[in-house]
Amino acid sequence: MSTTDQPTFEQHCEACRIIDRFDGHEDGQIGTPAHFNVLDERRLVTTLRKAEGSIADGVTSFAGSMKFVYIHGIWFGIWVALNVGLAGVSREFDKFPFGLLTMIVSLEAIFLATFVMISQNRQAARSDIRSRLDFENNLRSQIWSVHIGQALGIDVPHVEDLVKRAIAAAEEQLNREVG
Image 1 (spheres, one colour):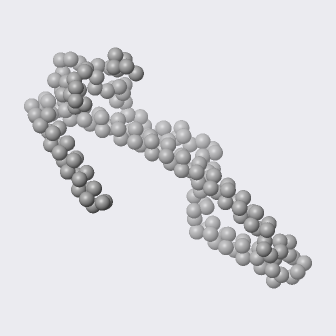
Image 2: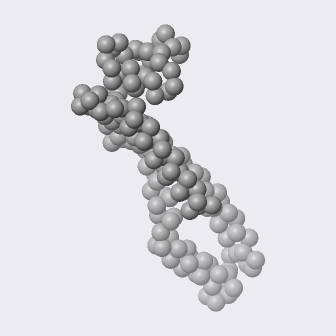
């Protein structure tokens, strides 16, 4: 999108000119969102929820539970007990080293890994929606704040300079704590 395609602000609004200068040059472009309509996150997430995704979330939720562990512990115990002859030699169907059990467990692991990845992708999509909504809300707040500050006669460039210094100090402190 070229700068001529982007919406421009009202030239007579001093607060809009201040916002325009935040990027380092005044060019008449303060943003492209269509007047910053915030979308309903629940509606967007609902549109992402398809039957396949819901099934993947359910399987992943169950596979990550202690109930899943208990069921598998019991299942493996019975399988091994049957196949080492504890229930009688006539009951053995998968002799040691349990090749059939190994194959079943390997297939289960493949499918569970796939379900986990599907659920992670859905969670990432939800996170992207939340990030977009946060951006829109932050942009809306910034524009409103500058306009209110301008109406109250607050020195907006001075306040913006303080904000930049506070952010730099906070980042420096975080880097000291992390590093």
